[in-house]
Image (cartoon, rainbow, N blue to C red; front, side, top):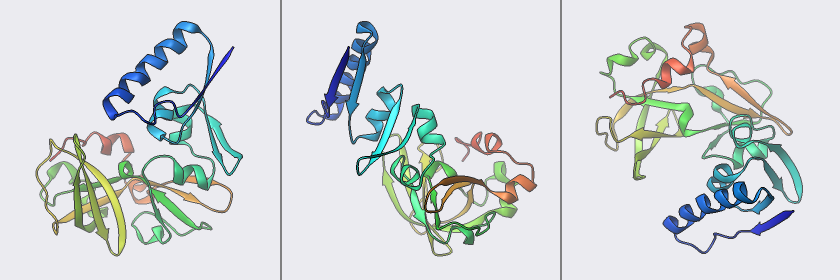
Length: 212
């Protein structure tokens, strides 16, 4: 048995939509049948699915689990469509990345760390950071969305409300952990080469999430 659901929660407000997501997951597990759930809402797809099929203009771009789709996009379309990413053509201007035979790169907010100059927690990597000026700050409830200008490259990162206040015009130290570079057919995960040379891994850096 198969149940087809075409944008079933589109007309609901946020709280009711979230409640109904849990209810639909419960029903799916209880009934033991396959749900084909059509949605343009990425959060719904990532939250509710066991398997996601990403389509573009009628063609399948990628099939995988939510984790696979999000963390290992296989095509330029998927890398740009899934998640909140900024398309950067001259990403190689950023420290730790070389040009390569790519048309550009996607930089997600979670790939970018911005920290104050007096933050001792980042003392071992401050030497390979670069300066970025805060151009905009948006309040997102449980975090801030921070837009930065790094030598003419526009980046976005998220900042926990537990960290020290920041303001527009403030100059921060910025590190980019990784990017998704792409050509006409594929997407490729590129790690920051300067971080690799210093033997600083992403788990190390991500442990600074609540660092001031």
